[in-house]
Image 1: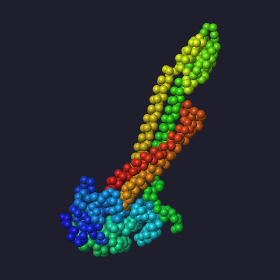
Image 2: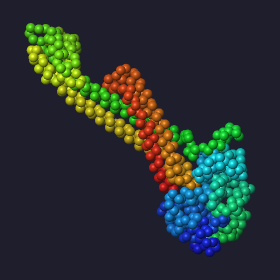
Image 3: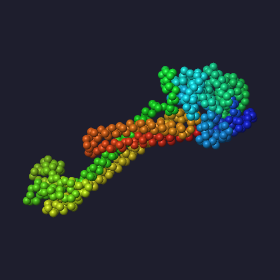
Length: 243
Length: 302
């Protein structure tokens, strides 16, 4: 059964970069994937989204990065009701959100460097202004020698690191990651976690959907736990518990 | 082995951002081929329509610009002298550019198909013919020719081709409209296929649309990207199709001498200009189709 968990986040509404008010979501005429979600994410917060497969973790992220719309309820991003946001404003909301997609979504005809730079190019930055930053970031995620390689030649873990680099390159206000450590080894997983924590320290609100309980436990960050589309727990991670 | 865009660390091309849509994509080959073939067919049909229209006009002008006079010699004169006198008389009529008595052999040649080789034409009183070419600007009428012949006491019948002219003009009009109909059919089929192929090509790049959309690209930016890309591709394919059709038209013109491939389908050099709008039209259709498809894909994503 869902509960109103706003009380778990003692923040003012204006301070919440993401706010769900009784939000439900369904795909077409299917049964609701997400049911009556009410919570808010304060600016600069760090949460994991946990839950079994099919619980609605990816759908929750989709709502936030505006790839889907609530079938019920109000969703506020950066204090703006997304249902009322004009069409020409939505792209600018999306630019403030970095996403690590579960299936990476890399463009196969662009080099790793160009893939990582996509958000900056869309934001109108010139190559001269971002070249060094992108190169440094790719070096940091271990792709220094793979910058000019096309994605089809990258290994699964390399693709994942590239997808992460693309998501964080624009220093987004919100970072969403769907199973970001699913294809990397333990050491790289921790390295990626450190990157997310560092971004969070700089003010980015981070929300990570994961099955990796070890990663969640190591971070010590709170969780949003979903069961069958309902938010059943929001707060500290409890090993062996609902998370 | 890795595919690299540059060869060395100082290669500046490696750092030059690649376009969001690949310049060349193997998936486009079929689209380019289809557009080129349809543009070729549309251009070839256009050339055919123009040539057949010219031919039809030519037949009408030829028939209406000429008359034939059948001369019956009187008892006291030979057929040759009667024909010569007729030609001389008609040459002096206002509106006649030329009047020429046809030799007996030519008159016989005209009736041989009707009588066959078994008949000895020497035994028959074959009427002599006078071919009259009328002045193009102010042609004489059949009546004025008849009056002139009567005035000189000549026994002759003036055939102004009215019977044939109506049939020829009707046939020419039908040929013209049928040609135009076929051209419109092929042109609209070409436009539909270009639009369909563009939609298919764009749908195959759905992942690009999705990623750009979710990364914050504005709808107009994405639509323009695809619009320009597919318009360029269709223009290139249209150019190939139109160029090939023009080359074929030029070959027909060269191969057929002054009248083109055949007098039935005379191609003029100026006709080849008709293919010029084709690449532009193909680009326009592809651009509109790409924009509409991109907008529809984006709507699905929003």
